[in-house]
Image (cartoon, rainbow, N blue to C red):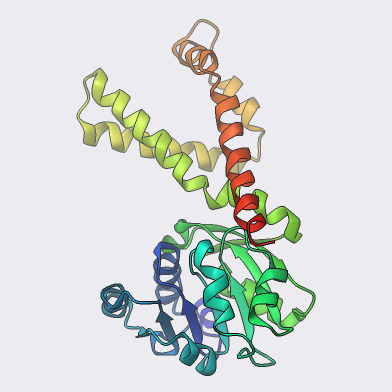
Amino acid sequence: MNSQQARSIEGRIGFLGAGSIVEAMLAGITKKGLVSPHHIVVSNRNNQERLDELAHTFSVQVTQDKLAVVQTCDILILAMKPKDAAEALMELRGTVRPGQLVISVIAGVATSLIEEWLGVECSIIRTMPNTSSAIGLSATGLACNRFVTEAQLQLATHLFEAIGTVYTVAEEELDIVTGLSGSGPAYIYYLVEAMVGAGAKAGLSRETARQLTLQTMLGAAHMLLDTSEDPALLRQKVTSPGGTTQAGLEVLESYQFQEAVISAILRATERSRELGAQYR
């Protein structure tokens, strides 16, 4: 996206919530220059220290008055914890105006529930970015309710493209997106922890092990992206019979590595559904 495109979103954006995903989104949005920080306001329930931190870091406006956010902003981004969503949104019943766009990054909570809690028929887009939005490399899934216009969908897509790539899916698929790419960075970091730990245990300095691990992962990701080859084929190409790679893979197989990763993603997907089901 070029700088001219990055300046194209007009209006005020209000965040209801001030957690890690909001910080990541603020970092991506402000770095791209998509919206002036003076046109962004962030609120949370009672943590003024956290709001002051975000104000200092990103030069955005902050408040603990979420009603004021609804009244003054054109785009509302719901980013409270799932357990707090029902109470927080029912306190705002009837306040969302026609033409406002509501974007949710709340894991597991359906657009129909958000509409019910807000007490108005309104345009709601449910999304699942990940924390790589802070460096403009998020993979974001996006789903719309029946009131979202094509212009609003394009606006939301444009907003999230400033912090990575966007994939529009059916809402029933968004829990899978949550388990796969929403939680995905944590799986990668967990693998990096293990690889760096192994390198250090074998005798490398932790810094050398870290740099080798990160470059290896970066190279592997680019091989997948640039060649478009199947990962199984690339794996086979670097696995010589009786060699070191085969020896390592045999250990991973003995621990059912692939099955563990698949189970982790399926469990995260199930948990996303559970978070939403408790409100149905």
